[in-house]
Length: 159
Picture 1 (cartoon, helix red, strand yellow):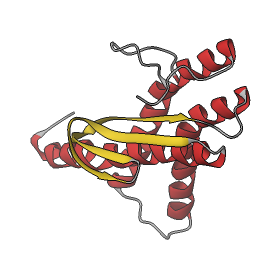
Picture 2 (cartoon, helix red, strand yellow):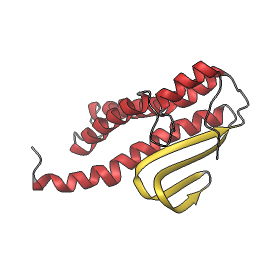
Picture 3 (cartoon, rainbow, N blue to C red):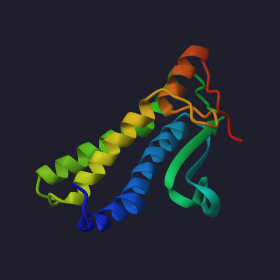
């Protein structure tokens, strides 16, 4: 049951854990796109831009969402596009496994922070891989994978 004592952890989840999970997810896309020689642009949040660091753009509502766009792959094959779209969720899974291994090895404590991190990571993975298009017509990673397999190339170039 949610009580007043849960409110601080809610804010930690919403304003710290979820943006970290989003950043790790987008880092997976970025790393694999760079492996395949792609030009990358990625963003954390929505709304007015607060700052840029290289290809990363951080927006005012940094806790809301994230996206990564790429183009000009050196290895422009269907499997490369699938790997890029799957990489975000794969990175989330790898981080979950590393955290659990560190907790099991008594390097990290058993803590609500890590429990919530794992919970929200799994939630993030689930909705990332679910095939759908948002209200603006942008595909989830799962839908982008289906589109790439169907059409043989990415359909979402950098703006």
